[in-house]
Image (cartoon, rainbow, N blue to C red; front, side, top):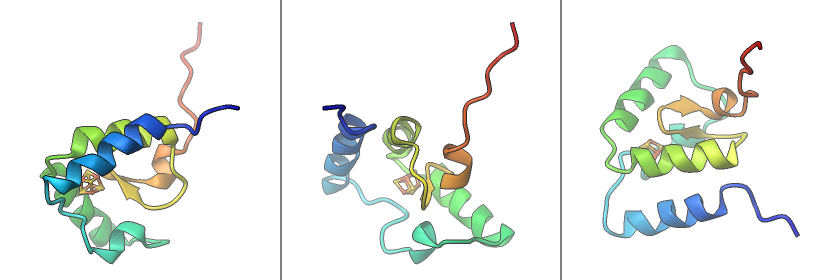
Length: 87
Ligand code: SF4
């Protein structure tokens, strides 16, 4: 059976908040379906100050979530296929 993408990164991220308060805690916009430009800038700034940014970014890169706002960017940007360099 194929393991869930990002499972280990998710475990590390979920353990960390027990010791650390994240700016996104209880902020509904982080799970909103759509964000306007001002909302997105606000969330980007919150993520930029987050002590768990690296763990969150590692999870987002591994799991490629399709909803939410992760490590300073919306899921729609995370889930885009990676660009492949021309050879
Ligand atoms: S970097 Fe991740 S954990 Fe930190 S505020 Fe942003 S979404 Fe929340």
